[in-house]
Length: 83
Image (cartoon, rainbow, N blue to C red; front, side, top):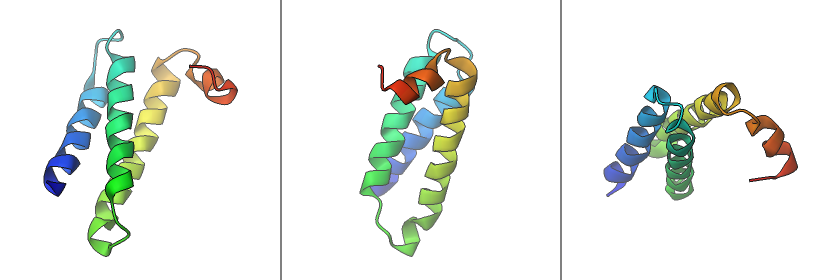
């Protein structure tokens, strides 16, 4: 089960970062972020999860870059709390 959850966020993350259709990108980013954050909540502080936590942090940073570069207005919504 642990491996399945790990693979799911990774699959959705890869889909988002390789999406070439600008119409699909916002939804792909949102799905990837939700999966990544869900997985992060289930990880322990054990050393065995350290590598995955590091990969998750890198994935979240990359998704933020995608949003800033490809989703107009994302940065301003981030500060105002607008949907």
